[in-house]
Length: 204
Image (cartoon, rainbow, N blue to C red):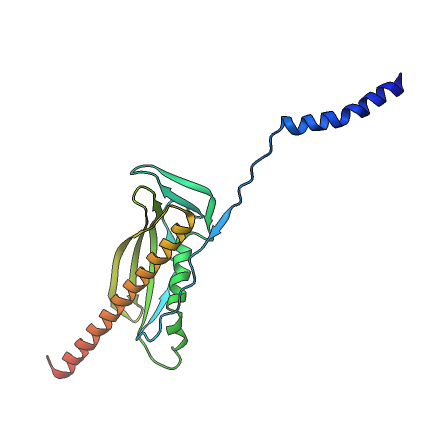
C-alpha cells in the first residue's frame, strides 16, 4: 500500500508543478532608467572667473522625474530617474561650463565672481509639450561688497514628445541658456566697470 501511495505521489509531482506555474502569473519587470545632463563644452576666452556654489533643490521629485498632467496635477515617474537632484546636476553642469577659465587663473589676473542659487521648478508639462526650469540665483564679488546681482530665470523648452529622453534633452538646453545668461550679465558688468574706470581717469 505504501508503495502505491509513493508511486501516486511521484506521478502527481509534475502535475502539481505545472499547476503552480499557472496559478501564479509571471511578474512583469520594469527596468529603472537613470538620466543626467550631458557634460557641456567649457566656455573659453571669457574675461572673468566663476566659482559655482552648490545649488539647492526646492522642487518636487528630486531623483524622480516629475510630469505635469494639467494645471494642478503632477505625476512622479518611479522608473525614470535623475542621476542626482536637479540642484546638484545644474551645479555640476555650470562648474564644467566655466571650468576653462579657472585653468588660466595662474597666468592671467581676472575678476572672480561667485554664483549660487536654487532650482525652483524642474518638470515636463505634458499638455504644453515643454520642459520648465525655474532658477533663482545670486552673483556676487567676494572682493566688492557693493556688487550683487540677484534674480530668477524661467525657461520653457518645446519638445516633440513627452518621453524621458525628451525631458533630459530639454533640460540640457535650459541649463545652457542659463549659463549663457550668467555670461551675458558678467560681460555687461565688466563693460560697466571699464567705462567707470575710464570716466574716473578722465575726471568725468
